[in-house]
Length: 415
Image 1: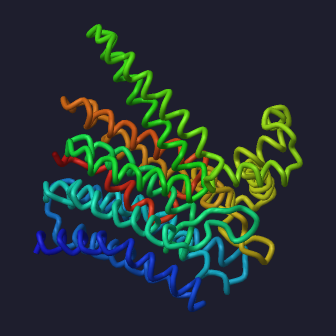
Image 2: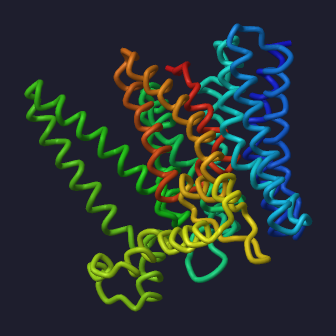
C-alpha cells in the first residue's frame, strides 16, 4: 500500500506540467475557467494526508497530527473572522486562497512522514523528468511561435504552453541547481550543451527577472569555487583558458542580449518610466521600486496601512484576501503576504513549520560529503529563501511550493 501511494504521488507529479498546459489551454484558448492543475495538486495533498492519518505508524505521528490539527483549527478561526468582519459570500474565495497559502506547511509535514518510511520517495530522476517537461513546454511552442505571452499588456515574452510567467519562472529557478548537477554528473557534453541551450533560451524568452538572476547566482558561485580550486592547485594554464572562455561567452551574451525578450522588457520599462539612463533608477525611490521590484514596495506599504487600520481580530488572524469589495492585490513578497493576510498567529504557525524543515534540510546538507551535491542543495535552499522575498510565488503557489517541499525532503542524488 505504501509503495502504491508513493508511485501515485510520483505519477501525479510527472503529469503536473501536462495538466498545467491543459489548464492554460482551457483558460486562454477555450475561455473556460477550470484549473485542472490545482485540482490535481489538491488530490496529491489529500493522498498525503490519508497516508499520514491512516498509514504512518512512527512514534512522532501524534506530534505531526497535532501540528496538522493546529493548521486546520487556525484556518477555521480565520474563516470565522472573515465571516464576521466581511460578507459571508466571499468565504469560499477566502478559503481557497488560505488553502493555497497553507498548502506548503501541510505538504512539508506529509512529505516528511512519507519520506521517513520510503527512502526512495520522489527521486531526483523524477524531478529532472518534470523539469525537462517544463523546459520543453516553453521551448517548443516558442520556437514554433505559438507560445502564450508572458504579459497581457506592454511587456514582451513567452511562457510556452503555460499560464503564469511568475510561477513557471519560480519553478525553473529553484530546481535549476538540481538540473545543472544532474548534467554535471552525467558527463555528457552533447546532452549538456543541448539542455543548457534550451534552459538559457527559456530564461531569456520568458522575460522575467527571477530565472536570469538565479542562473547568474548559480554560475557565479560555481565559478568562484572553481577558481579557488584552480588557484590552490596552481593550475594557471586552466585559469587563463577559463578567463578566455568567460570573455568569449560574455561577448556573445552582450551581442545577443538585445534580441531577447528580457532586454526588450528592460527597454519598454525604462521608456514607460521616461528614464534616459538606467543609473537614474538608483537615485529615485519610486523609480527603483517600479523598475527593480515591479512596485512591490508600494503594494507592501498599501497593505501595511490596511493592516494597521484593521480590527484587532484581523491583526491577530489576518486581513484575508478580499478588501473593500474587491480582490486585493497581493504584495508578491511571500513573507509579507503571509504576515498580513494571516496575521500574527497564522504567520507564526506557518513560519515555525517552514523554518523547522528548512533547518533540517540545512543540517542534512551540512553533513553531506559530496561537495557538488552540497553546493547544489545550498543553492536551491538559498534561491527558495531569496526569491520568496523579492519575486514571490514560491511559498504561496502550490505549483511551486510542491517542489519546495520536495527540495526540503531531498535525499537521493542521481549519478
